[in-house]
Amino acid sequence: MAGSLIPATRSGPFEGSAPRTAPAVLRTVAAVAGVLARRALLLAVLLAFVFAAVELLPGDAANATSERGESAADIAERRRLLGLDQPVLERFWHWMTGLPTGDLGTSARGESVAELLSRPFPNTLLLGGLALLVTLVASVALGCWAAAKPGGPVDRTVSASATGILALPEFVVAVALVLVFALWTDWLPAVTLTDSDGSPASWEMLVLPVLALAIPQIGWNTRIVRAALADEAKAPHIETAVLDGLPRHRVFTHHLLPGALPTIAAGLATSTGMLLGGAVVVETIFNYPGIGSVLAGAVADRDSPVIAGVVAVTGVVITGVLLLSDLIRAWASGGRT
Image (cartoon, rainbow, N blue to C red; front, side, top):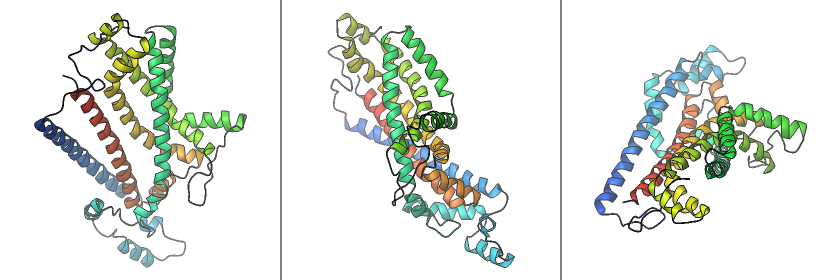
C-alpha cells in the first residue's frame, strides 16, 4: 500500500476544516441551484418523451379500459372525458402545470394518480432502500478487503467475481435465488404476501427481492470502491501515514476511506437509479406489492398520467440521492486546502 499522512497544516473533511466564507457559500448554493435546474429540465424532457411514446402505441386508454359490450359512442364519450380528443402537447402541458402542486392527474380508470401511487411506492422505496444499504455495506467491505493486499489472491478473486456479478441481470439473479432458497432448500418464500395495509406480511419475504436487486450492484460498487482506494493509495499523505507507523486499520478509516468517499458516494448514487429500475422486474417475479404491477397495468391501459407519475416520483427520488452525492463530494473536497 502506498500513500502519505496528511500534514499537520492540511485540513480534511475528517480532520477539521476552515470555516467557509460567505462568497463560497453563495457559490455552493448557486451551483446546487444550477444542478437542480438542469436535472428538472432533463426530467421534463423525459416526461414529454413518456407522453409521446404512449401516444405512439396502438390504441388508446379509452379502448384499453373499455368493457365488453360498450358501444362506439360510449368509447367516444370516455375518450372525451379523458381528454384524449385534445392534442398530446396540450394534454402534456395540462399535466405538467399540476405537477408542482403534487397533482399527478387522473388515471384512465378514474383514480387519482397520487393516491394510486401512495400505496405501492413506499413499498418500492423500502425495497430499494434496503438493497442500497446492503450494497453499501457489502461493497465497502469487499473493496477494502481486496485493497488490503493489492495484487494478492483475495484482490484478484474479489475483482474477478465482482466483474462477473455485475454482468448478471436482476431477473437472472432473482430466478437463481428462487431455485436455490425457495424451491431446493425451502428456506425463504418465493412469493410476497401482504398485510391489510398492503405492506409485506413478513420480513422474510423481503430477503430474496432485496438480494436480487443488490447482488448486481454489489459487483458494480465493489469495483468502484476498489478503484477509488487504489487511486487514493497513490496520494503522498498515505505513504507518510504508512512510514509513520500508523496501524493499517487507522490508515484505512482515517485517510484512505475519507479520500475515496466522494467516488464511493457517486457510485452509490448511480446505483439508486439502477435499483429503482430493476425493482420493476424483481417485483413482478416475487409478486412484490410495489409500483412494478402499477406500471405494468398502466402500460396495458395506455395510461399516460400513471406512467408519467411513476417516472416523476422515481425521478424526484433519484434527483435527491444524486444531490446528496454532490453535496458529499463538495463537502469532502471543500474541506481540503
